[in-house]
Length: 139
Image (tube, helix red, strand yellow):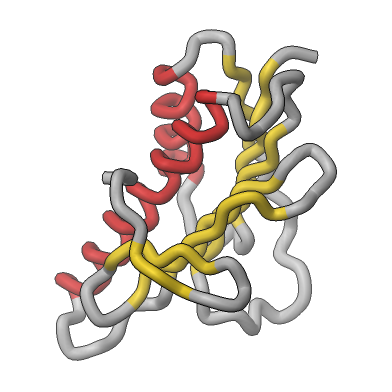
């Protein structure tokens, strides 16, 4: 197995297949050796989370901390989350957009990076479970 990342939307109805294919192509364009798998599963439960979720699971042979492909994929998914948040904000300015969450997991299923895009200004906020603060450089 080479360097591979699995992209899984939390709710299959939040994204069109075209949007997910575009995300896959953009990630692959950053690193020609990176294989991107879309894992669109059936909706589980009742979809009680307000967040629109993108999960990225690194299945590469490289250590995730040094894997440029994993970091690039995360940044691209964050860019998509921010764009979708702003689109919703502009389409319905009187309503708060749904928060967007992007999480990068290592091969063991442990979260490595997590952000939330939310009010008041659609910034990417790093969320480590205890603290939340803005992060830069993911535009």
